[in-house]
Image (cartoon, rainbow, N blue to C red):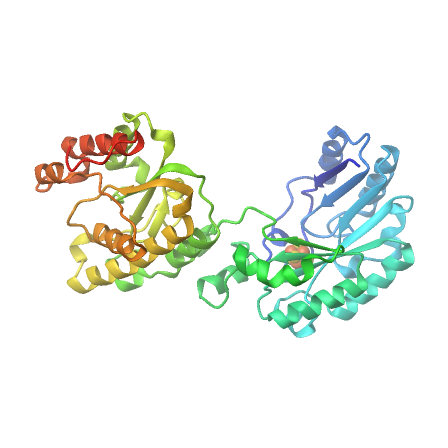
Length: 436
Ligand code: SF4
């Protein structure tokens, strides 16, 4: 059976208020006329089943005109499509709206999310369980199949609520999809995560919630149905400035560290290399990082190395350098007090430890390149010690002696030569020498 998926970016969900949803708040890119042209360009001949996603409801007259739906249904029948899966809120599911789809094997997916009216109210779902049941009846009378989405770890809900919802959804549906809850950054749930009042489930936790249901042939589970990254929209960004505890533990840094520790999946590489930050942001644009980049390039192993910065925001894989807040925070070293330095070491050690616990297995070797007297280096060493690991510093002893009194020691020629030689020794199978 040939199945295809079509994303219809047209109009806007006329509800648009669900607590975790960002899609419903976005206006679609195309007019109906443009959408028709896009559909006509798709090769739908020979497609048995078509799934349509529209970031809202295909049956909503405010989002799609009845004429468009009629055209779409006729066009699909003409092309020989046999099965169609669409999505809709319950209030738009009426015999009139379904009429054009007669002749197709129709499945309508409804985002019930929870079978508890109190939770639905707090979640701002805008309908009740009764509304859902009414829609189910209309669909049954029409002869359509029912697919119900249930949210795993919905805010304001408990695991017991989830289990009850699954039982209820299975009773009324042909298919049930248990979907992990991730917040769109524009949605209020994202702020709840930032405030520490709710957090998404990682793979292991999700598995624990759904394993009881997974063996049911009517159930599908979906851990992550879109590429989730905590991108802060411009209106939620703040200027994080100052060498203070508030900056160090800023909730925006904490949310990103949670993401890197529990959701991020770096590609396996030969070497994980921890690097210092730079005054200029984003890091790769700074002179220091450009020199480090050149030194690594000279090893011939650039592609085998994952550069990861350790600094005030925590552990930052280099590919995220240009994301807020990593591209804009400021930690003036001259404001540092002995107390904040101590706190920095403690907090950074924990962040490095958690990152290594989650990802060390993806790398063959782990090393760092830091000033020997830096707090970050101390934090990395303490983290390594607690994990029973060894993380060599590729800024060797004699190179450090040669550069330590110079401005920006890690960007000095002797230090960079030590880095190049250290990487070569590590990756070309020789023992790490003491010096360069
Ligand atoms: S979840 Fe669905 S109904 Fe709710 S706002 Fe988003 S698109 Fe609209």
